[in-house]
Amino acid sequence: MTAPAVLNDEAAMRLALAQATQAHAAGEVPVGAVIVLNGEVIASGFNQPISTHDPTAHAEVVALRAAALRQRNYRLPDCELFVTLEPCAMCAMALMHARFKRIVFGATDPKTGVAGSVLDLFGYRELNHQTLIEGGLLGEECGDLLRSFFRERRAQQKALRLAAAEAGGQGGLPPGVDGA
Image: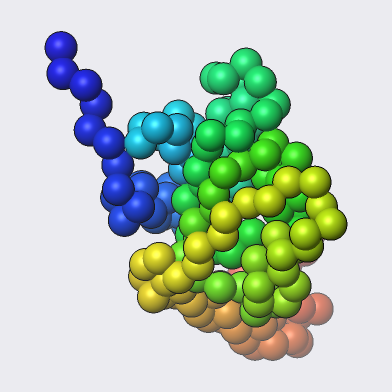
């Protein structure tokens, strides 16, 4: 029996991108995450707040829950997270509480990112755990997937608005629908 190959950072991020692609296919914001321990993936996840009706079901939290169950411990001090988008405050604090050794993200998040974009929660030396943060790994690919998703979303919303405007004489219902 051969030992599993130890992942390098780029390979781990490509697995996170594959998770993000699954999120996109499910109609979720395409963010994916993998958790690595000693060079092996022990958990993965993708965004699922829409499908699960759970605002905490971000890719990082989904993967974190799976890793904690697998390790039978809520503390994961030797683990590394690879995620396609800079973590938000909720995810950052969950990862700090779990004592992650390192977090590597792809795209920055200029609206809610807290690993340096909007805030730097990981930079507060007053907090009881310090996590190594690295950003920008495959950042262009990660960002392209997100931009593509939101471009599609905006086009869908525009098409719905146009259809509603065209049906304006029928109380906002699309043509052929009489509301009975």
